[in-house]
Image (cartoon, rainbow, N blue to C red; front, side):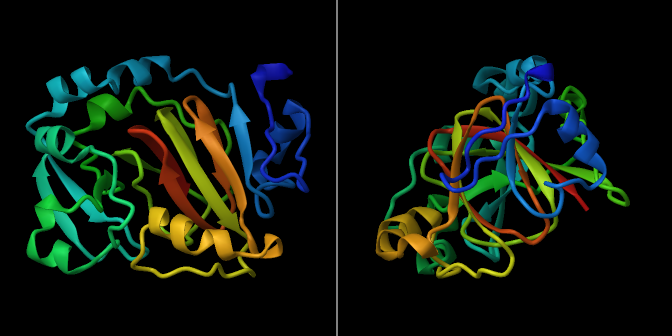
Length: 247
C-alpha cells in the first residue's frame, strides 16, 4: 500500500479499509476527521527521534531538567515538579492496580505516589532540541494549529476517561492500550480511579454493547482520535509517546 499506510481493526464490527490516497484527501476533513478514530502506520520516519528518546540519551540531555508530573485521574488535580532523572530512576515502575488516581496518599506523600507521571506539561524551550527531530503525521484540520504533548510513563499508568479536541498520538517506545467511546456515549467510570483500576473493577461487568472501542498502539504507530471522543489510556510497558493536538 502506498506510503506503507495500513489501517487496523479497532473493533470487529468496524473494519476501516481505505486506500492511502483517500486518507490523504481526507486530511482537510474527510470521512475520518470528524467521525471515527483510525490507526496509521508508515506515515513518517521518526527513527532519529526514537534514538534520542532512549533512556541513556534522555538522561544525558535532560537529567537535570525539572519536569512537571500530573496525577492519573480525569482532571489531574495535582501537579508536582521534580528533576527528570529522579522521575526516571525512582518513579518509572509498574503501577499498583489498587492505587486511586487522586487520594490521601497523594496529598500526604505525593512524591511516593505511583499515580503520578510525566505527560503534557512540557517546557518547549528547554526540550526544543529534542522536539525539532519529531515529524508529526502529515495531516491537518482547517483552522487548527498543532501542539505537541510529550510523555514518558511506567507500565500500568494511564489517564482515565476524558475528552478534548482532535489529535494524533504516536508511541515511540512501548505499547499503549486505548479505550474509546463516541461523544454521545458517556462511559461508566469514576474520575478518581486509574484506568488500571477501571479495567479490573468496571470493565468485566460491562455488557458487550456497553464496551468501548479498543486498540493497542505499538511503537511507530499513530492513533487519530476525533473531536470530543471519550478515551482512556493504559501503558502496557514503560512507554514514550508524543501527541499532536489539533486545537
